[in-house]
Image (cartoon, rainbow, N blue to C red):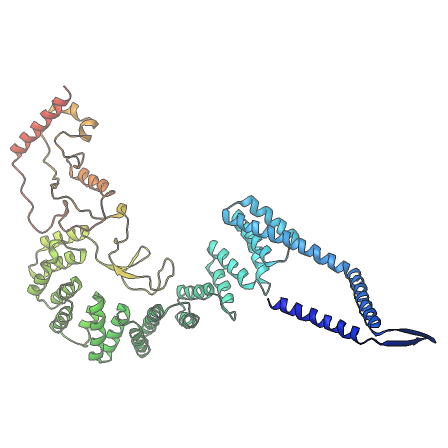
Length: 539
């Protein structure tokens, strides 16, 4: 609408000018080389306007002729650009769809049309990766890393290629170089942090963690947790060098960032106890115990006072266990302290509920209790046998590795804060179950006494008879022997859920007396009746 108004205004001004000239006629006399030229004013004005238009047209034609080579060159360049853009776009589509031949063809076409364009280099590198030509991909990424506009992209590609060939040192070099840029990408900051953690460079990892926090790569909760883990790692390293003051300062700083981190709280409690700051140490250990009961915390709490007697340690552990009533770790800590203090009644009282379905630690404590209290080596051996077959206790576990002590990084992947206090078989599949729960309707299979040799029964020892006995339930093992029963349970475990039983497994000897077998004569009669039934199947 505005353009229409402007057009009408211009037309009106021109019309008013023409009318003004027509209303005011006049003569103009021009003398050119002694010759007078006389005309009207309006004619002179119109002649001047026509001359200006003609000069403008002639100038435009001359300029077009003068600039025609450059115009042609720009046209050809635009045409090549369109063809190159088509080749790059179609090549990237072929890479995304997994078409190796098309990706290679379009990459060659793009390299011929626009050899030095960033997208052409990217397409060539991805086509080489797709076809499995790692050397060509690395050469292309090196060419990209040598340019200012594609430097970070080339370093990222080189980092990925180094990871694929398991070159941790090379990957770290590329990540460090990319992280040193003014605007470091997120992958570089995180990769440098992981590499420094895996190498045990706790100081460098802390510095990188602070930079990642400022860049917004990690949230505040993750930052506090990771910083606490790194400070704990430094404290353990410092404590190993007998620098108690430095280790204590680092452990206290770690507790400040993560009060429930068990290794930090246990280390801080032990070091504060050595410095005779008992109350402060007790507060730190108690806060961590309420959140995560752990044997290391119980041990640190028991030895807060240097030179305390075994009975004093027992009283302290009982006070700690009362803060988490019903917790298994508290009961085990009290039992351990009671055995050290020769308070066998207390140990038996706290272990009695756990001995119904004992874990390995419970069974080993019961074995120690039987040996120390009564000197009963037979009962102690029974409990040790149960410990071999009992379910595993929680342990420091990371990436399938079970460790006796906490470590800041995983020895498999180098991941920070990978170790967790949990059941080692909690994340295993059904094929990895160690103990299986049996149905109550399925009685334990006991090995019968050997049957008397009967000659007429020998022909019945064929495989079909052993594989499908008549009077056996569908889920029972194929043979009556104890070893075959164990193999049958192992086959059943492939489809059962990996759970820890709350009852004794069939082959668990236990401390309780075994049930007496029936008299041999009755067993022989029952065995003979079974064989008669089997013979009837083959008549």
